[in-house]
Length: 124
Image 1 (spheres, rainbow, N blue to C red):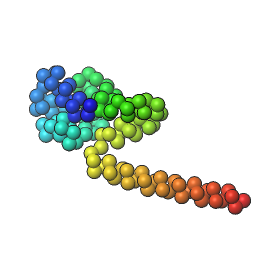
Image 2: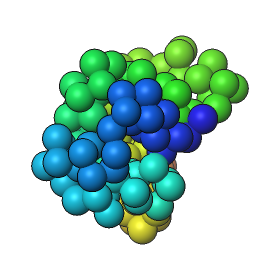
Image 3: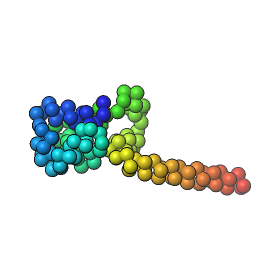
């Protein structure tokens, strides 16, 4: 289930309109609509406010927005990896693409440094 569906379901269960929810969170009705249709993801602060408004945890909001097979994989990961995944999930598509590009650059640099490190060790 995607996070937008989770937010929409929680809002419906509380009986809030999108306008009422937006007012309670200090955002626009358009922002709520974008979240519910998964066109945008709530940022970190909004995610906390949503969790507080509906008396759920951020883990509840996020864990219901990933597939079951992915949940099995992330259960085995450390806290840093889980925080990274949760943060990544909150980004819009453009920022996700940027982050992936930057991560690839860092990985390339790391591999180059490892290769040079190995070469230096072998030369000794």
